[in-house]
Length: 144
Image 1 (cartoon, rainbow, N blue to C red):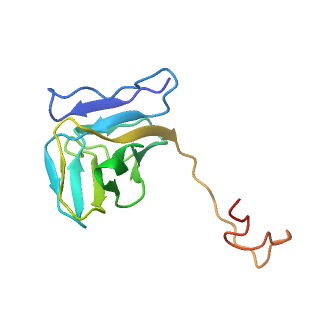
Image 2 (cartoon, rainbow, N blue to C red):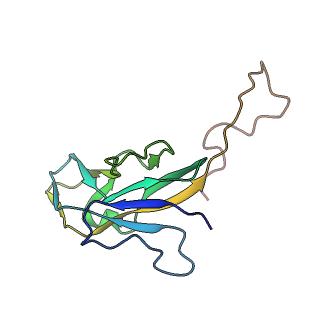
């Protein structure tokens, strides 16, 4: 088991937890109410700061129901680096409102999910040519 130090900015909100035994991620909630205007990006504070073990990082992904509100992660996913660990380094979710009306995210509403993952650095080796055959190009496996 990985131990992660957690700071809550608002102790009245719940500590993130796995909702089922089989859950891969913990839900994070909005610390305050945020209004995201139509066709705009909003920044939602997630009420946590973390101190991760060395060589670990956090993946933030949209909850599967986020699109029902007219929102999606503006940057696809979020990455929390190991060294984003200061007392004031609160995690945030950048969300894009793809609807034509404002969306209100309520305080305490679960918005994104967090997975703590182990990091392994890679060393890149540049070569002139690969010895393997081309597979057919980007998107070549078809639609079925």
